[in-house]
Length: 395
Length: 205
Image (cartoon, rainbow over all chains, first blue to last red; front, side, top):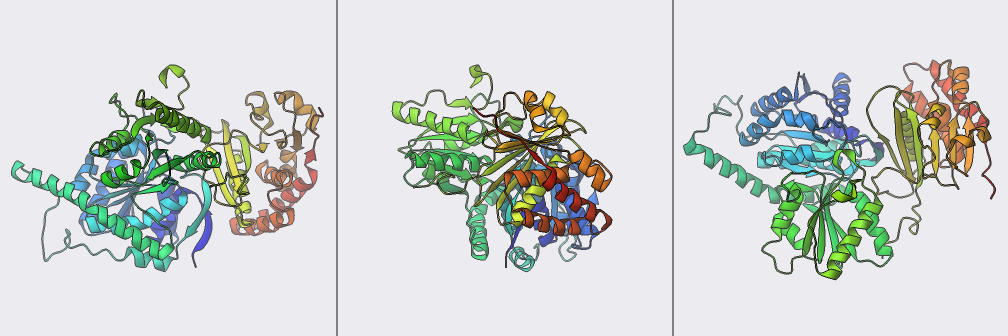
């Protein structure tokens, strides 16, 4: 029997890791992800797992440690947030190009400047081009479920994976959760049997050598191919997970989209608040829908574009600023994906929730209201917008 | 057609906690989530952090519903407000957005009506509990969150009192397995708080 419990998002990730019992954890504390290695160290101290915990002096070393462990053939995990992720930057690219299937719990927090401990997506969105898979969660249940799917995906694709959740909102928020039995998790995740690894004496190899020009581009092209090939792996893993738990996952979730006239696309916990707005607007007879993107890397360009084409106007929501003067990262990729399609909707961008700025059901009402204006007037107006900023000159 | 939360009978009881860092307002909020979960409810318990330091004002929130609650924002129109430190009344608008059908529950040795002048015109029910005194008497130290939790349970009615007492006893036995001598004191603090909370009236219009 599945176990009904109430846990914070950080506890949920730690419990998933305990059930998986990886070989190595290398981690350095940073708010709001600190509780993950903290809880996990408790499991080690109590003998509930036999993971080797490597306490390091920085996130740069945390990532180096798990890379070393992964290259040696071990299953390695870490956790971080914000500036910690930024301090891993150099190594993120090395891990991905060395095709090391590392699992990292990212508890999303704003990047410093000014310093802030609260949630937005600037940390992992900043790392979007590093070659890591990225999966995001709306709830504690989803981050737990994603953590259990992480290793089968990452190991089959030989790509590292970030399992992201919203700092404080889910990481420190306690809510109901259904846990899977330990044996089922172990069976689902399976044993890690890499084909090649440093400690395999029959087949000596080098990891991370200099990539001279005649080889570098081929390596990068293969990395891009691995990202492409991860699409079916992600779907197959989700299908297998659904067979085990009944909980269905994909690249994104469509909420009330079938007859929707306008919709919004967003990532993470705010999707729940958006769904509440959809429920209430539907009760008023307004045909609104919502798409919650779960997988950002690889970007599900074609299916997402098809889903967005069901409506006449779509608001694409970014919890990160790119300072490109042309919208946030999700907006640029999602809007780009519509280019080749006929009957494409108007697509506008809203930057929201930076540094923990709260977004409410009423804010989502306002966005849907704006979308109906676009729909009625057949005019998108300025496509690059802000919501939730106090000064009305900057909305 | 999808129903609204109210139509679907998934009316949330929303509670906002005001305290100071280190006093246990967040812990009380998480304990309330725990006991409501044990009685079969869907729960959310989450803190809002500003600068993290002892003594800084902090806020924590509970949503308690019959089915899964999707909303992930803070609570601006709570049904109940719990104030763990009465000195906050001078600096924080604790009754901001509070339903006049609900109540504010304040840790103080004063009577409810003595505090109305400090509540920015709030017309709803004021309840007071001397959580500090109860804590000193039963635990020998000032841990106001245990009596405050009991007062919130009693006033909000989110859980039956007898169920609450039984669940808390089990929870304390688990939590304090290594120091069982504090279990009795905590149970006394809860029971005393259930009896001693003073319930004021609404302002009659």
